[in-house]
Length: 155
Image (cartoon, rainbow, N blue to C red; front, side, top):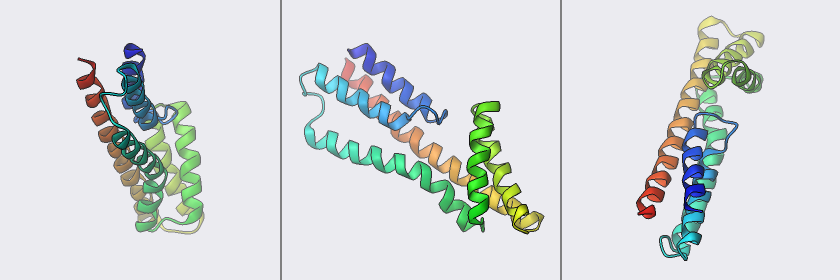
């Protein structure tokens, strides 16, 4: 059981870069597994409930941060949708970096499609890029903390 939890915690960190794998929820599941395996001694119910809430918050922010940043940088709704299509397409063709490039290109193409000029379209693409980097950093940091907690409780 302990090895399964460690694999889940590692997959959680790995999943922060590969969006097909739900990173923070897997890392959280690892905390549940080690708690269960050790008779619920390592982490109390209050801690696990707080971590569940934070996991949910980080997971939701993963979807919201790119859109919020793109809007801040002037992206239209259409370019946001096209950036999502670009992200998914890029993920399949050039994982994991294709996701970032695809989202950027999708936002720029979307902005050009709605009539924005070059600099404005690039600004929207930059907003999507910044949002993706922030959300990835947040997920990596949070999942990394859970991996650290897991490894600390293993021994």
